[in-house]
Image (cartoon, rainbow, N blue to C red):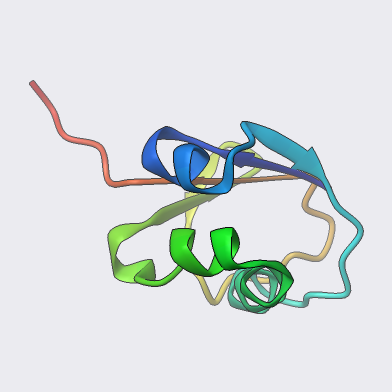
Length: 81
């Protein structure tokens, strides 16, 4: 699965994207796996209320299942202007 990071999430993790193999069943499971990897992931996902997630380019929720998902993107909320 491809995992993409945008804006300050990318800055904290230090990568724009990575390819992962995961046993996570939901987005939140994936977040917990990532947070357990290193401090930089812990910092990026410390407050998930400040994050949004998209699965295969569709806005989703953190309790959404990952079965069949090819791409997960994490980003801060977007504002209009």
